[in-house]
Image (cartoon, rainbow, N blue to C red; front, side, top):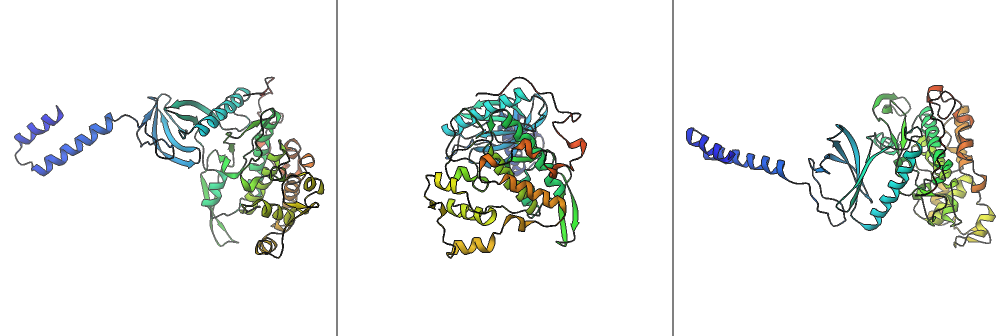
Length: 402
């Protein structure tokens, strides 16, 4: 019908050229196709959903663009046409193992929401989930950059100590909530801590002699519960991303909540220095770095492990090899990384040392960590879980199973 109108218009106005008419028809056809095309239900060779901006899933979520990508799938920004707000939608690959993992994550998130409906404990809020042609989709509140991405975008300029303090305090509080409810996160890392809002100011750094970004608000949320494990469930032998993996995991001695505490210690160091504490991809080298930075691994752990890294309680490691020389030249005892003799820097490193205790049973708990002197300077309006802080009363319902 519209094409007929255009042709009649062309007959009436002979000054239209054939070229202009053709261009107008092409434009109209493109518009018609765009408005009528159904969302794709095709997958690429890796199992990702093929989508385009403007696609509407479930007749409700309009895709606005891609936010990120991982081994699990992709995260897109969508507009909820029903509620008229934006949110992040995690679209899982159409692959069985990722689909099953997503179902487990949804289960954990539902139980967290049941226990903490007002998001007092800073775990990301799940808004919706659905199965879209084999792709599990999980909708979350929109957040800012991860503390890692902000660090990277800032040229790996470390966070100020007061920022490390507030981020670390919130992280301890949030993960403690999981531990109190028989859960271990198992994949704590800077990529899984997101700012609520990553807007920033630009300030001049006199030491670096250049401008650097300084985030305006250090409020964060904990994300990615795909590997979270309840105490009674099967515990995979290996958990955690390499750089944040505790020694008991590497040595296959079994793990529980203390492995999260080790990860938090590694994260605090990274926020403070801007560099990864254990930058390696090899188990034996990782253990050698630990010994260089933290001292000898306890003989009890060395003798108990069934891995082949030790001989008579000592790590088999050639310090004269190229890898051995690299560690000697690039790693140093932990306290030598301290950037200042100010008391708050000393308190931070005391806390990190307690979190990086080799023996899980001797490692500080997050309940104890929150009372550490490093957190004494947290202002009253940022304190969590204390009288007058606005924390919700503890509910009697316990998270016990999926």
